[in-house]
Length: 132
Image (cartoon, rainbow, N blue to C red; front, side, top):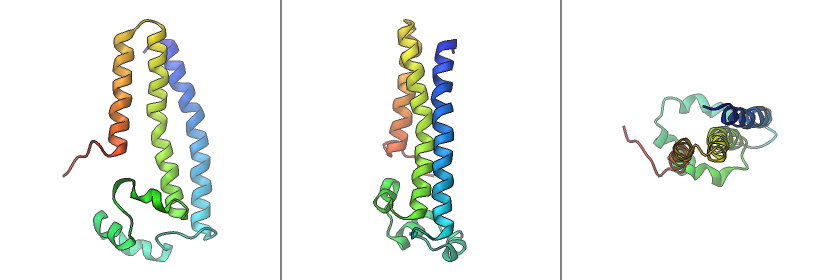
């Protein structure tokens, strides 16, 4: 990766990661303090660890995939939202690198970086699903 693309990628991650980490800490503090209600009561959490994901989602009334967004005001879903924001750092950084590639007329690398961003976003959106 050329120096400018590396710097752009690194700058985005250097900005996003601490910011999202702070959001995660705040969301977790709100969750464990009980100041904001949660979808899953803390006392019920250990009993859910033995269940499958589908059973837990069904028992909570939370849809699969991005269904948790409907409950974003609950503290446990705020924690999940912060984690989802963390996952956006990589595609944003990759897009920043793609811009640098295109500026330097390294179109092949720019196209590869853009394709990476598209695959990551498709996977995040649920368009790409792997069933075990």
